[in-house]
Length: 159
Image 1 (cartoon, rainbow, N blue to C red):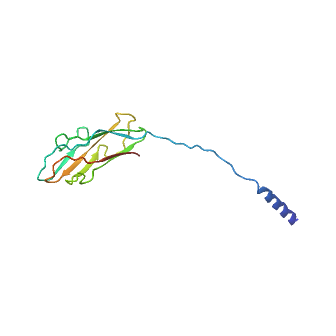
Image 2 (cartoon, helix red, strand yellow):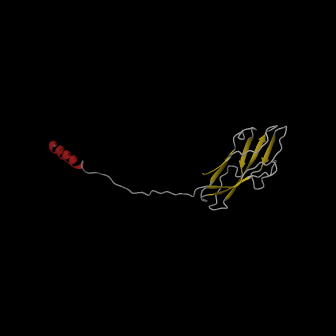
Image 3 (spheres, one colour):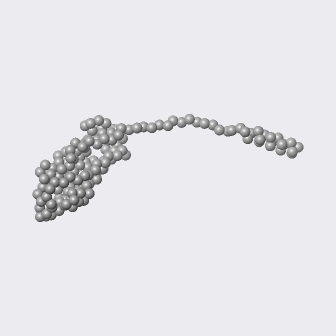
């Protein structure tokens, strides 16, 4: 009797080994594409015309529309218009030019932007969300005279 039960069990197992116990389930795959961030330079940062002095001097420009400060004649803050997807906040940051970018005077820059690093919303079309850049530059004593252009970087990234 035990042999018959064992044979029936083995036969049943063999016949079940060919049966697959699988199932499938479909699912959704989604993607959302947001508008690319665009930065338009509307005005460059300009510390203006200053005199060469026997002592070092630090010139400043506010990171706002007026761009007031202690800078020279014709000084202006930089102004940028930002556009992108208004549904997503961004963070704005600025990188100052390298020290000695002018190759002669060892100028030291410390730039700031008007959002202060806080999350900011973007407009989807121009005139956009306006951001200003100002800051300071330290000019050493007895600097070489001339006119120099150094490069800073404005970065805008979605949070």
